[in-house]
Length: 97
Picture (cartoon, rainbow, N blue to C red):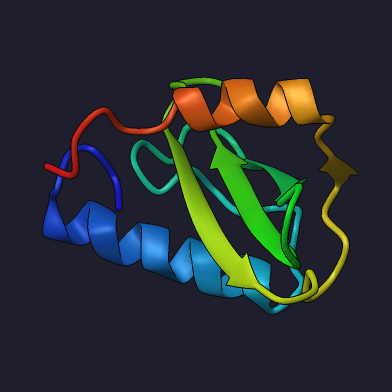
């Protein structure tokens, strides 16, 4: 969930995650500031089936992850290389609010 812990923002992140899982990748506004469309990347697991969608706002920098067990429901805009994926995981929230 988002670092802010705000209920409205939390609901907006959940809505964004549901849209991604339904196959949408473009036109999903930033749930925090509505200041840009989210960038959506697929980060596959190296040792098991599944991965995470990384949802990131290019303007304000807010980032969230959607865990997917099993195969990716649909391909994301791009697949992160393993070094990018490691960096992306380190950029997540430092605490869960």
